[in-house]
Length: 116
Image (cartoon, rainbow, N blue to C red; front, side, top):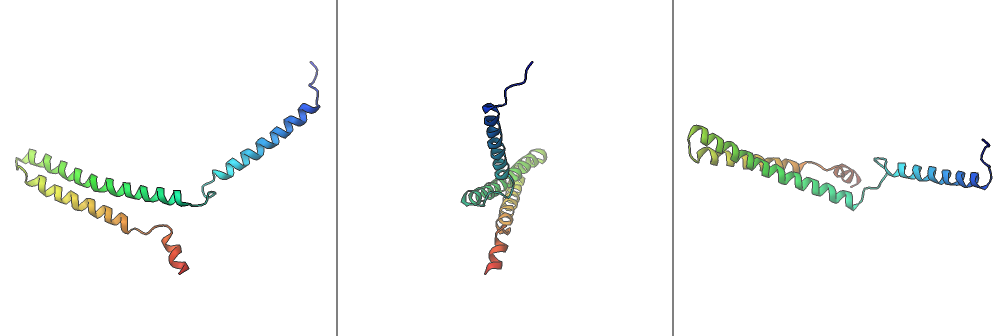
């Protein structure tokens, strides 16, 4: 077999290869963890994440307390007393968890305090 002709097709292939290399380089740079600037979308996503976590902590505490109280009432035969007690305890635990999440310092709060 004879070798292919190294004429215009070779230069076109090299140009395509160079453009692909530069596109891959740009894509790799944009996917690095700290490459993209923190914008409003990232702050909104963080706030929504914290809000959903607080809501699930609160709901989880209430549901877990109600379930434990209901099962304890069935096991011991004490009609609504354990249900009410564990419901109150679960509610307090849920609010405490949501409060602790709310008072936790954010990542930007130390930078803001240093600038003032």
